[in-house]
Amino acid sequence: MEKTWNNKAWFMVLPVLLLVAFSAVIPLMTVVNYSVQDTFGNNVFFWNGSDWFTEILESERFWLSMVRNLIFSAIILVIEIPLGIFIALNMPKKGWGVPVCLVLMALPLLIPWNVVGTIWQVFGRIDIGLLGYTLSALGFDYNYVNDPTDAWVTVILMDVWHWTSLVVLLCYAGLVSIPDAYYQAAKIDGASRWAIFRYIQLPKMNRVLLIAVLLRFMDSFMIYTEPFVVTGGGPGNSTTFMSIDLVKIAVGQFDLGPAAAMSIIYFLIVLLLSWVFYTVMTTVDAEG
Image 1 (cartoon, rainbow, N blue to C red):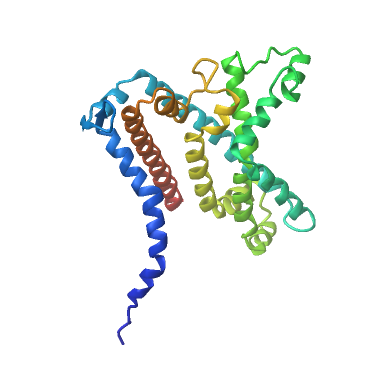
Image 2 (tube, helix red, strand yellow):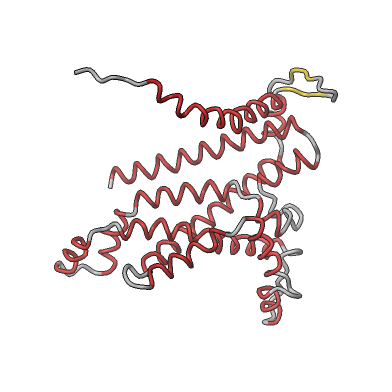
């Protein structure tokens, strides 16, 4: 018996396709158009080819901002993934503590990015901020406005506070899906706490960990609002990541051609690195 295909179903998703085309594809084509053209104003454009891409790729400013992004993302992953796993492992699996912990973990994720930046901007001030005032009172020379190291520490702490909860919730979802029979068998065999984590919990969390690593890498590599609100990319250019530099070129200098070329390169870098993360982690999972 042959299956009857009902192509009328495509009409149900047509509004969504049109919305995506309007909100994503058309702006993307506009960016591509600007990246290969130049203008002297009055909407008069002329072909510029790959000159903007060459200018960006040969710019020391671009490479420095990308290095900052890579370092920041690496630090974030090294801190948030193990910390998220540790917190998820120690969260209660039954009882009244479960909803309490889940709500507490979800609270930072509900705060808008610009509000998070404002909170930490005030929190780190040495005159009225709890963090800045406490460190100054203890004798530490802390000032995220003037010291690049303090600025980096502040931005990293802010991101860890804001986004570790996402890793925790994903890992916790993987942990609660493990049947009790696994733990009972491990208890009978006399398995240690480390053995249970290594051979039961970690393999069962591999899928959610893949999602957590990908999401945290993409978010950290594309971070903009929080560090911009807290430091504005400073002091100097110490916290000027690629997203902040891109906005400075597009809005501050109004160089739309180089900004468009940089945005496409930026997108391709995120896409490539995310694919590398996915390929490596799925290969390791398959071999394990």
